[in-house]
Picture 1 (tube, rainbow, N blue to C red):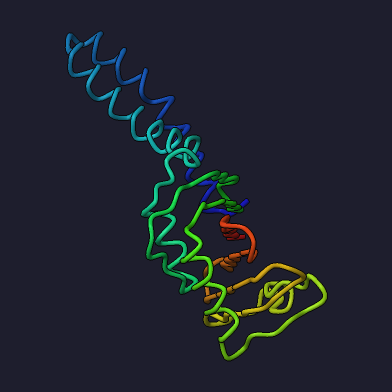
Picture 2 (cartoon, rainbow, N blue to C red):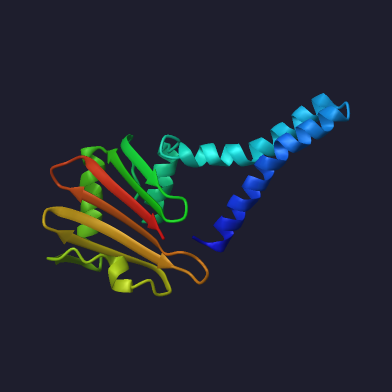
Length: 184
């Protein structure tokens, strides 16, 4: 667990403990309404981000999917639907998303992958992150075919930041685009 996260948890716990203390202290001093307002604000400072983290998977919108795809230089022209989205972790962030895209977008993305300068067909499932071994790097993008899947994978690790790995997988016979994003 990172030191920053630990400090955040401790500060949140302190604010939650302080909230009823402030309320009862101000109530005893004859300022009940002020106590309610200040205690509520202190509690909301902690609870709103906590609830957003808990329901983060359900709060994933099409604009978020477009932003994630833009990071890996894939754009969707036609409308699409989010079939599934699961986000796990607050320190280590793992996201898996399934999008139902148009066959026209699917064919265009596969064509872009196949015609990229670094396109290759590979036999093993050696990811770009495995190859980079968490070393510092500007964004690197691989385009390849693994069995019947077309994959675009990016990896980026900047000084002082966690590595970001994004993988988009498509199959020629399926309109489902699989997107995974890992930050650990």
